[in-house]
Image 1 (tube, rainbow, N blue to C red):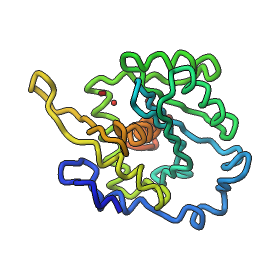
Image 2 (cartoon, rainbow, N blue to C red; image 1 turned 135 degrees about the vertical axis):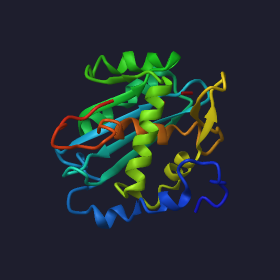
Image 3 (tube, one colour; image 1 turned 180 degrees about the vertical axis):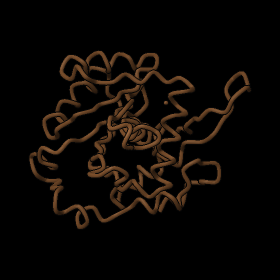
Image 4 (cartoon, rainbow, N blue to C red; image 1 turned 90 degrees about the vertical axis):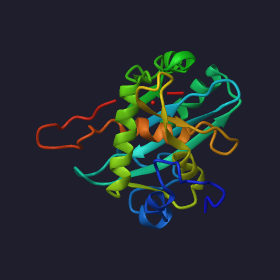
Length: 223
């Protein structure tokens, strides 16, 4: 799997991502019914979205948060749309809010991506805007690394595109050369790592240090 992807420069190595892969139809059968009108019933989910510019692909991820502090995140659904303008992207998202009890949604609003966010807020006013600064990018990547390193992320073993998307994220230097940042290589299969970015948006609702006795709330990447 992913045999054509060189992960030597990736911050999310293939070996770590393989540990996230499960047979979701069997292991999640008790509470997740993918073909049902409401696949996860009325249980809460978190959604991350990375809009698309012209020619890019957009990625949306639905995550079931841990049932207990320190538990596992499960990626219940992924959507990837290509060649859709902002209106079409925004019109596709309400389907998700009707299928799931979405209690958190975070959207990349960097630059022109702001357009999708403004349209989504018309039907989901609580959507969180993520304007990719180096600090926001660092926090989301570090959260993803922590969750995956601790074996707290699960997704279906058939979703090799999600694994490839994570593997496309690499370290780079900023234009000034003064600090490390993260960037995504672009190709036809992974887009600009939109599925991985969307997943990181959702995971970012849990504080970087996780849920502790002193923080019971949950919180909020560059092109």
